[in-house]
Image (cartoon, rainbow, N blue to C red; front, side, top):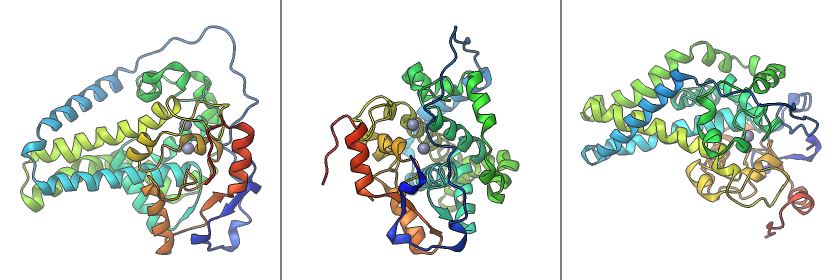
Length: 334
Ligand SMILES: [Zn+2]
Ligand SMILES: [Zn+2]
């Protein structure tokens, strides 16, 4: 996909002088010249630390479920707030902004998104974006961190429980990531990542209900803390698993990414995944605007407030031509 096919979204058209000088983003563009090495696949080497931590987290989250009836309405509302903030840290933050550079964000917005990203605790922005660019560039090959050809479980969480395939590491190291290295907010979050996670993912969600409305520390830790964290993790993972297995491929049937409304709904707009793999630079990850896509509404609001600009999108002619050429025939216009 060439950069010439991008256009700037009218609602946020705030051209600035340096936008023309920027090199086009190519690190997330699918590389169809890549060929997997032949021979036997390397064995799965278990990472026991992650297996134990993930097991405890999910047991804690399930235990948290049983405490929902004893939680106050305010605590449950706070859980939703924490879910939305941490979700935006992934969707609007590390995904659409930092992995794909599909729009530009001002310093205060980047600080908020980095804070929200730490609350989601899914590796720091630099690492997440690097893995994600590798996912787009080498989709469904040995070099894809969560290669869906290794099955649902691997694409969902298994990839975090075993050592990376050597090709994932090798290809990740080849990316320059110069834009991420140049972003002080990204590097600051990386430097203080552990402290920021303890504070934003665990302490803040737990202490707010306890301090402001007298919720018990146990309930506050289990529900807005562990349960919310596990939920955001699993919903994010569904984009890698379910949205690479179930759904139509109206835009491009040459890869396994799918349009999955259930994932779009739960992941705040990230389930239009066949479209997203066809046009990774589109800030909306879909051609349907705000439909099932609160992240797009959030970015549009940020543009309205002057905190974001230069949202990249795709003309409908380009989308239709692409769907006609490569889609599975399920594409409907209008
Ligand atoms: Zn994908
Ligand atoms: Zn992506």
